[in-house]
Length: 408
Image (cartoon, rainbow, N blue to C red; front, side, top):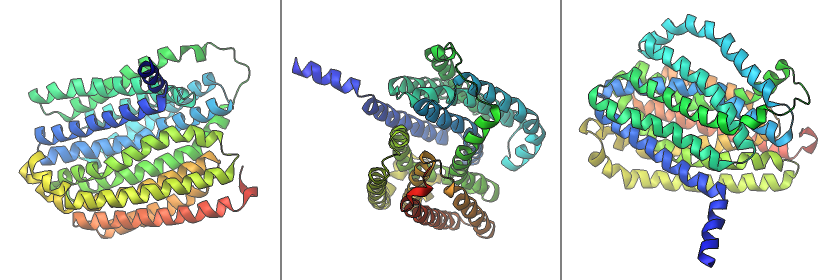
């Protein structure tokens, strides 16, 4: 009987279940990337990852809506009907500009217009999917969120695995991603339907919603800029090395993915408890210390032990990954530190991070334009960029915390 109660208690802990499922699904995504590296040639695999990196940049729109809706649910600042209408208007407004720049994107990404067009459809779908997930996240219904992710990744995997046995088509891989998003959206829309049937007590102007989303959008854009633009740059300047670089950063981003899963669970609580400044400050410092320690330990493990196993899991032309794998773990450790601090600022409605991100982005692009002839040069620039960003955000974190009057 006690054992049964223990199991029931575990399943009531939605945070634990979400963490387990999220780690499992990210493992599936990594294995899927590993599978595609075998099925595609190194050059085509690099092009695919460049497209996926660009797609990650477009996800910023949807994720901004998700974070905004999460805050709305926690604070009751708006209603879902107005947010949905705002999302529809945004998709419509962006349609024409996207069509106009499609030829330019096709040239820069070295992709077909069909592939770029599918990315546009995925982006539009993700805006509405993320909005539905924002409702779920705000109410901390992590079981439903886990199911949504399982549907998304499940459909994508079920389509891609047998498909690549028949043909190695980049547009079809992107189409599988679109189908996964559509399946997840249908599920989320059904379980959230009651929120749209409620009486509309008050109305929020669209301009107010867009202004609220803008600061979140800025943070999300720069986050995905820093995690995606390097792949696009490598594919453009070092096309023959793009496949190697894609696998290298995938391994480094495993730690980042784990940290983001924890942060995803922590953010609603951060918003709810922002009134207790001292307690939240201590929690952030403790979290940053653990992240730095864990990241350094992982980088050493990557360099000493994991690098020796590369030859057993990847094609022989990927053996060069051994040189960079430890370095990649350290790079994404500093990026994770920056992301945690950024979420702290977002919780407090502070925009201090925007200037930091803008400055560091210019710094990164300037150095990359000068040093891009070797992969190690690109990665050194990344490390310096993320280290600088973490230091500047940390300075602003302590400065903000010491001036309680500045907190909104």
